[in-house]
Image (tube, rainbow, N blue to C red):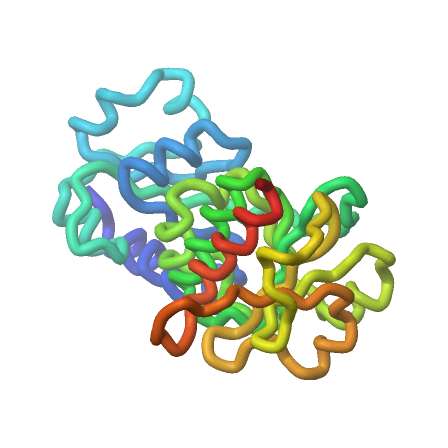
Length: 245
């Protein structure tokens, strides 16, 4: 049974201030927990129902510092899911590492993507296409937000996210920068390489005008119907698919 002290501590990690103060974050549900158990993240606590724990290999459980058997109601109390019959993990953030841009792969850059669900979905999309590096502007949603982690469906364990001043990144690299702009060239008529940086913009405002000067190749997905715009995660998937055709 969880103590009031632990419940208060675990629930505090839903807030950015305490996540970064403690250097811990929450992973919820069977899928996310299974992914983090097979990753190189350090797991401090695993809150699990008896039924779910019996499904986990002993080698995975041995990686956890402390395992606490709980009820479904306790998981709901501590986490953000409306229902959770499996588990919740408290995971240590990794130490920040220096950014080195690869010159032979595509990197994704996000300018002020504020919605956690969008960021998590984009991480999942990046993982699908084999992209392991994402650059986020300093104003973008917090990578460790539970909604980001949940939407990534475990892909957060394979994709590294850096928070950077994008202007500084663009001025210090010779890599081509592709940008999604309404005024861009039809993506289906564009020559795309397998290296460089793909810049995607804010959900409602697009790419900041201050960053447009660094775009060497502007891209646009032509509209066939009457929709005003595409969700940024959907647009990211469409553009990436064209890079890898």
